[in-house]
Length: 101
Image (cartoon, rainbow, N blue to C red; front, side):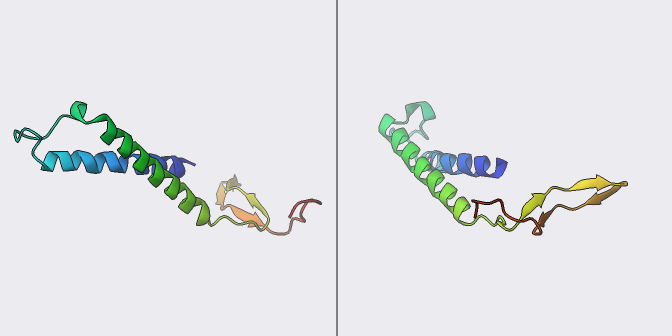
């Protein structure tokens, strides 16, 4: 879950970071240097936000489509027995509940 949130936030931030770098590289409108983020036009920020949202949705679709989760059995989480760590695994010996696929 944390990975999904971090990827979503990163995709939302990418257009703003690219635009900030563009503004730093470009000399501002007066030729005296980069503009302050406070001087960004409202339309530019809205467009950056829309592009960021589109990237975020695309990343979420990609993460969901490439999910490698197993649908075979029930996941048994890792545990400690007699001082030894037992890795987590999928128990495939479980019969499905009636009415579920």
